[in-house]
Image (cartoon, helix red, strand yellow):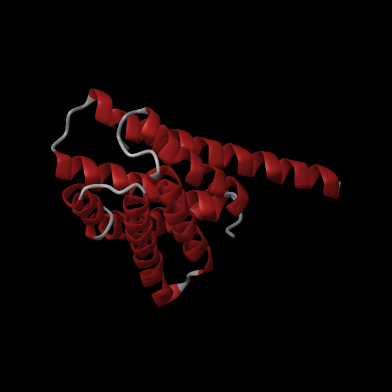
Length: 176
């Protein structure tokens, strides 16, 4: 019986992570067919992607969420939203740091995941820009997009995730 319960839980976790990854990927793809103003696009899409990552952490497993952390920047690159391919591992690292911090956070400690994500993305972008000798103007533009906008979308996604999770967890099974 325990083996069946474990397999059922693994299947449930996989299904939840896959659905949330599909939602996040679909929201990223919407930019291609629905022209939105850049600020709206950044805030809305970034918030929903971070919301999906949070819900994946809480409803499935860190291992499955890590797969989403990797695939989302790959999808963004393939879709043309990410023009500089060395940022794929940087965004993976930022997403993973965010998800690990969300997994550990509780109460007031929820202020740390968005900050950590922004710092990892900002630092990693600076490193990648230096390693690939990007022109100063391009480097500054990339660093600017990886600071406050990333913190903002991560914080909004976390806030929306907490709001939804508190309402959903009793309806979808035990909380983690």
